[in-house]
Length: 171
Image (tube, rainbow, N blue to C red; front, side):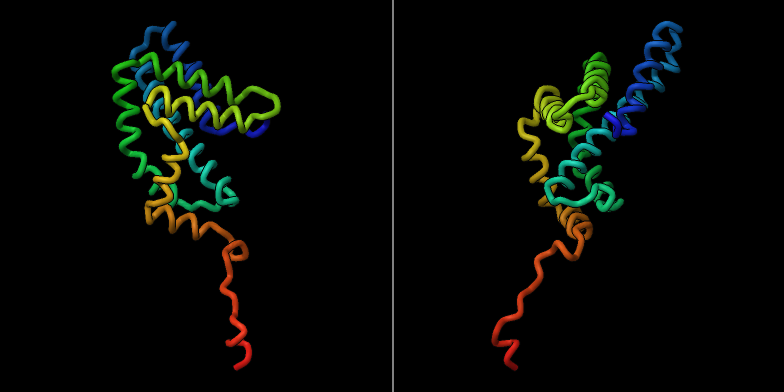
């Protein structure tokens, strides 16, 4: 798979660093790597949601501007609060989720997008009690800031154009 997310690459590096930190018994290095890993996991989850939204609206992910990303972070603040609490309760979960993301996203083969979508659905359902990722996306779509960012990203040619009425043409 040639276009692996930069987040996934950093997640893989963090996992390697944690293996080295375990063998070195360096708590500081391990704590730093763990914090970076958690941040990268959150970033990758946001990137995945952004990709799903852009696919849904048939727009390029890069077209969704910083306003969209900031709004997404704000909307997901509650989810990520739960995320961090889960990791405090179950530190092993960080490595488990990170390893699974790296495994699935770096695997070659057909149906990669389907596997990745299924992975994130599984993560949200199994570990964060969000049973339907589509519901998360639809909730995002009701946020006015996110709506504005999405509409701004849709090329003008793709937006419905008002039609001139026959009456307007006769005058």
